[in-house]
Amino acid sequence: MILNRNESEALPRILPKILLDSVETYFAIDGHSTDRSPEILESHGFRVLGQPSPGRGEAFRFAFDHVGDTVDALIFFSPDGNEDPADIPRFREHLEGGVDIVIASRMMPGATNEEDLSWFRPRKWANLVFNWLAYLAWGRGQMRITDGINGFRAITIEAWKQMDLDGSGYTIEYQSTIRAYKLGMKVSEFPTTEGQRIGGESDAKAIPTGLRFLKLFLTELNESD
View 1 (spheres, rainbow, N blue to C red):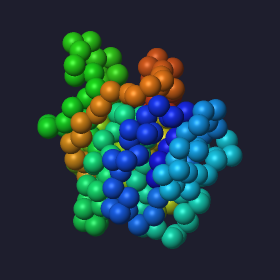
View 2: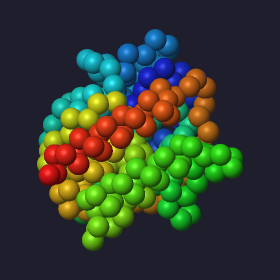
View 3: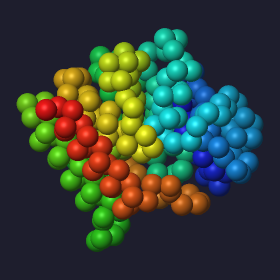
View 4: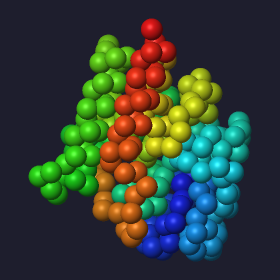
């Protein structure tokens, strides 16, 4: 499943690389794009669904509501150049092994983060901090998740129902990691190479997004008491 919002520059380069026969069904959720990206997706055979309200968390919920129980899991892919479409088939082998959530990790051995080209890595360092906070609060005794905020992940339908996620915007992935720890779910990761963004700018601004992650962490912590 593709999460799209104004990716007209990246889509012509990314879509031909997606192995569509590696998944049972595919479609795109469009977050109120103002460019030609919905038309580009349709020209490549994707069914494009406009989400009723903006936000990444809202897109996740809309996607799961749309598929219902017709599939076993959803793979979330953002076509902005950061995520490698060649990794999509790798999710299936993990899911068939009986895990609840599969994450393409930019932090584990063998992986590459887009900031690894620079000595100054604020997004990566913040990611590591939030990963450790979640693990220390809820994950001790379980496998440590190395990239708990990466959106390039697969979630089974049953896991989605159990987690009952209400996170908004970009907090949805971090909340799913936290609740997977809380519920003792089976999570697996594989190393990925994060590319450079193609065109435009990310909506996930570092400081506001980090503050939203911190607020979510504190909320989840209070709910655990």
